[in-house]
Amino acid sequence: MAIGDVDSFQKKLNTAQSELGFDLWDRIEVTHAKEGYGTAILSVIPSFLFFGLLVLLWNKTKAGSVGMMGNMTNSKAKLYGLEKSAVNFSNVAGLDEAKVEIQEFVEFLKSPQKFTALGARIPKGALLVGPPGTGKTLLAKATAGEAGVPFFSISGSEFLEMFVGVGPARVRDLFTKARQKAPCIIFIDEIDAIGRKRSKNNFSGGSDERENTLNQLLVEMDGFNTKSGVVVLAATNRADVLDKALTRPGRFDRTVNIDLPDLSGRRDILKVHLKNLKLEENANIETAAEHIAVLTPGMSGADLQNVVNEAALIAARQDKKAVQLVDFDAAIERVIGGLEKKTKVLSPSEKRTVAYHEAGHAVVGWFLEHAHPLLKVSIIPRGSAALGYAQFQNRDQYLFTKEQLFHDMCATLGGRIAEEIIFKSISTGAANDLERVTKMASAQIMELGFSEEIGNLSFKSSQPEERQERPYSDATLRKMDGEILKLIKKAEEYTRALLLEHKEDLIKVAEKLIEAEKINKDDMIALLGPRPWKELRTFNELLQGEEERS
Image (cartoon, rainbow, N blue to C red):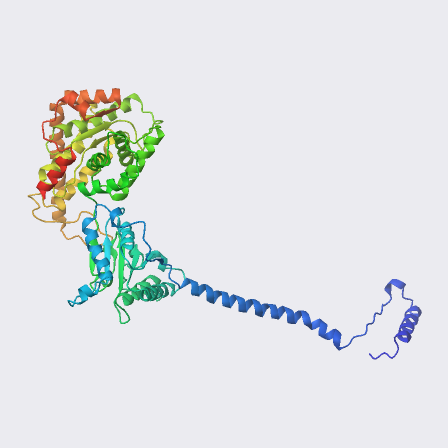
């Protein structure tokens, strides 16, 4: 509608509404405003500002994601330069053979022309294999301290991320940096995180990030683009799960086995850890190291460090000014059996049952030739040693005869048979003993060929991770079951006859245990007399025994 004059239109509208009789509140209100091009432009500006802000945020997000991915693909390896490290080969004890092999790699890098002049090829890598706590990582740290070349250290798990392609990119970045610093050393800890065997039948159709990372590592170690001057050290305690392409010569040329330390190795390790302790005046480092080494067969370097630290803590709790040998004995007991439970109170009947059970172990072991020498018997409840335990002095032994294993079975059954003889009933306290006896008997029959009925055959008693068919028939299985039961029955009868013969000695030891709660070798000698068999107890005796066996 075109309106020439707004005021004239308003008057005519009011007149028409009055003639029609509209009330004031029902009449139409007229509002008017003048508009131009400037007003239209102002109404559009907020929309332009909104879309401009969205574009700016998108560009920043895109740039940030690119930068984040660039940081993620960078290797997380720590670089140790030529400065002197706090750890060197003097801090690594008990690994003499391993140090010799690792020292050769250090010499390869320091003076490669000495070997290449004769046409030798510098080894590309060494795989450190051994149980946990034996010093694999410590040996690598010592290599960093001894080598006069840069040292890259990284864990196998640091290659893996949730994004596809990050692992291979980090491997490429690591080796690129290493070649720039060549000659140098790369150390990959826990390499089994990326080095597991690749699956043969992969029907998932996706991209396996771990396998892609492993493939890139294989190419970098022995592919077309490799260069000399980079040595790779890797550590694992699960060498059986590694891919064969990774462990072949040309990638890891050497496998350095780091086993649990022997008697002399434990002594050398303890000397390193005892340097920081304040010992009593009549005990020097040599004496304390030999004393602990005799009592800790089968312990790793990490276990020995824990024993030394526990001894210092025990001495500090008792407000002692120096650590004594008795503190080391208490520390060994705590590491092996756990903390004494003072709040766990046994009833008189339970205490009596435990006393005769542990006395049975002690008496049987005392009168058997091939049993280990007794150190201590206790009926004080501990964390992992149930309601009591008998501590024997084991020794480093790698070969066992049939008689030695049989006597070990008898000493293990001593607690159950003692309960049966004294109380005419048995308790649940021998569950762990029966488990050990069953495993020992099964190993002798199924794996070690100690049965004339079965013959010189060896079958693994436990199934491996991958399910396999049994390599023997049902008839052979029934024979093995019969031989296992026969062997356990023979050990049971032999143990029962021995305890019936020494029933009075059993009662003496048990009653003394009920009274004192803890007895040692001297108490056993006072009760039963000297042991009828020669014992190797001191460090020199055990060391000489090892040399005679070797």
